[in-house]
Amino acid sequence: MAIPNPIPDEWRAGALYSTEDEKGQFGVVKVLVVDADAVHIRVYQQKFPSRPSSVDPGTLTLGKLGDKDGFSAGHLPLSPRTFAKWMPVFLRQQSVEDTELEGYKLWEEANGGIFDL
Image (cartoon, rainbow, N blue to C red; front, side, top):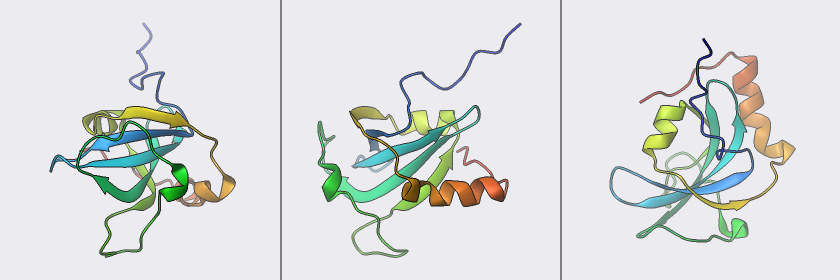
């Protein structure tokens, strides 16, 4: 008997999604890679008081650790269950640039773990 794939088909590489955090704020993430075990995302630092229905990708930025403008991550490997808890809503499709995959490639080489919260 085949085990069903726990990752929804609509989660795809290059897609931007709005997400909700535990404080009721909204952010934007980009899916870099979807594999059998994880959704690998890029978390941008911009926060919104309500869920954005569109976003200009040119305005999205990554901050440094401790940045006063908010948390960001170039690569974050999440279990499908954890990503679903973020309540992702599709915004738009883009391509994934090679430079965006640097963190993913380092994670892959190190046989990194997956956040499953």
